[in-house]
Length: 324
Image (cartoon, rainbow, N blue to C red; front, side, top):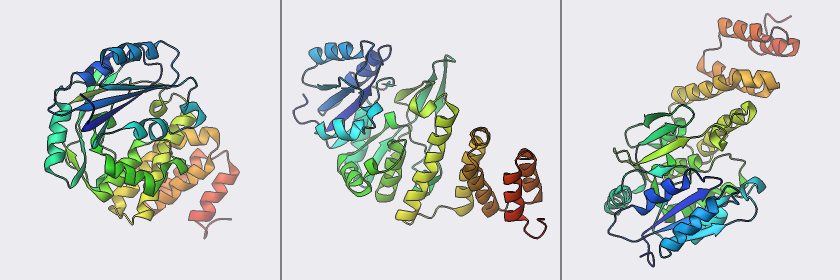
């Protein structure tokens, strides 16, 4: 079936024993009038995940290509998808479903491919998804409707990666032009969607096709305050890179408000660990917004009332005429 696949589906797994069967079943149930392939990369799981993949590989040898690591590559700083998975893809389109997520619509691929085949100006198609909070046993909908523009993407990321399908030719151009392996980015998908929005259109298909599992302790949902803060602040670095390199000019106030919210959400963690450079960056954003009036400054001084260095910095920077 997958001798000439139109779509290559990429799945990364690591200790996903409780979830991997549901993930693989959601992919293999796809009803299409074209061939697709599934490339599964197991990053040296220790919980039996690899054994489950081998069972599925034996049942679907013409569809599944499996890669098994003996040492965890992610912990070595490897770009797993870029180094081990993308090079094996044969399809015109690429879809992603990580081993702890799953697709729920058997016509997901068919709907999206039909759209992209009919509209070559679109580089990506995505849909809404359900979010399953395992620790709360709660499911909610991830819904942000509309085709996002570059201005939208540079401010907010409405795209849930496991719902996407995108053109491989554009992916290869992105990897060649941006060289994300040389960047200190803590996420692989968000910069990709921004780049796609610069070089093509992005299509929103209004039907739920998948479920995203929200797992505490994952890379994007770390329980470590500092790691969580750095992951969040890294999105500012990504935004600034694309703004500067590609002359992206989102609405100024909207963009600054977004940066302000990111900094505000990390303010107290930054205080706890003594990252005053982050506080300084937040103050600069507030100043640009015109929000750093006397009340805001005095509030900051109150927060830092036991830090003479920070209090003096605030007064010197924003009230030089009254600083003594």
